[in-house]
Image 1 (cartoon, rainbow, N blue to C red):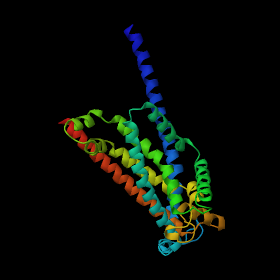
Image 2: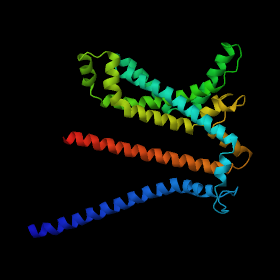
Image 3: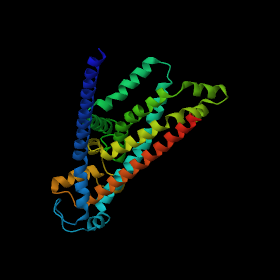
Image 4: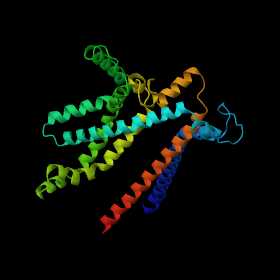
Length: 301
C-alpha cells in the first residue's frame, strides 16, 4: 500500500507545483503588461521633452530648450500656480472638515446620525462628477439671481467650494478606518487621568488617526490637481489670471487642444511633475518603512 501511494502523491505534488508556477507566470505577465501600458507613454513623453522639435515623436537632437521655454511661458506658469494654490487651499480646508466630520460622527451617540451622514458622504464618491458640477452651477446661478440680485458669483470662491465638495468625502473615508482601528480605551484613559476633551483628542486620538489624515490630504491634492469637470463648470475670474477666467493646467490643455497641438513646453512640465511625484512617493515609502521597523523593534522588546 505504501509503495502504491507514493507515486500518486509525488504525481499530485508535481501537478500542484506546475500549476503554481503557471499561475505565478501568468500573474506576473499580466502585471508587467499593465505596467508597460501605463508607463511606456510617460517614458516616451519624458524622452521627447529633451528635444526641441514641435512635433511629438520627431527627434531633433538632445536639448533643454523646452525647459527654457517652459520657464519663460507666462501662460503655463500662471496656470501651474493657479493649480497649486487651488490644490493646497482646498486640500487644507477639506482635510480639516473631513477629519472633524469623521471624529464627530464616530463619537456620536445617535445611530441614525451616523447612518445619514455616512450615506450622504458616499454620494459624491459614487456619483458622476458631471452631476456634481451641474448641481453646483444651478446652485450658484440660483443664489446669484434670487439672493444677490442677479450677480455673477462665479469666481475663485465658487471654484474653491466645488473642489472642497469633491474632496471632503474622500478625506472622511480615509480617516474613518483609522478611528475604527483605534483603541477606544486610550481616549477614556486620558479623560480619567484628568485631560479635558480637547486635550484627550489631541494627545490620544489625533496621533492615532494622523496616517489617515495625511492620506486624505494627499488624496485631496491629487483630486484637485487632476480635476477638470468641476473646474470647468465652477471657475470664474481671479487668482493669477486677474480679470480673466481662471486657467488651471487641465483647462489650459483642453483650450490648447481646441486651437491646435499642445505646446511643446508642456512636455517639460509633465516630466517635472512626474519626477516630483516619484520622489515624493519614494520618500513616503521610505518613511513608512522606517516607522514600521521602529514599531517592530518596540514590539520585539
